[in-house]
Image (tube, rainbow, N blue to C red; front, side):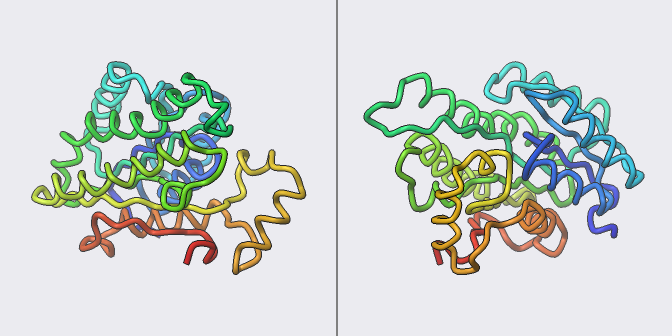
Length: 248
């Protein structure tokens, strides 16, 4: 498949989970891939090796997305190596759950810094390149928690709600340059994060989902692929849920 042939995509948090699925699906569809990671270099290299099999150019870059200056340097290095950037997927995210009354300032700040400020940092630094693309795309991975809220996730829900506001603002600011910006709001998806949930919690969650199962990373990636493609050229400022009908 060649839906994104000739395009270059940057995916933050691209070494595992949803980010990895997005990177590989875009690579399979012809896009060159820049994978941004902060933790496991081995996991990032594995994603790059898998992308290489599709005959595209793929590189991994380590970066603390919450660091404005470091993010700027990494974005400049990506442009130098790839020569163009058409697509940004802001997927990097962390959780530090806890009830608001017991949540530390550090736990609140660190989640906001990575999930929300990190997305701003990469959108801010890459926009100058994406605006040069004939069909630039920015896709932010939010969450249904940012729409409905979730007990025990004041920091995470706030960061993801903020990401929705950022999405709508970017969509308006960059529309004149033919750049679209949309958000995807996944529900409960099978990832490393959800794998740590107790079995009783997982059973309760699946009962509450009309489709009676958790989502797969590939199902989120498929939407990201569509939003990055020419088929979605008239869609911008939207927040699309991928949650099995949980918040329909």
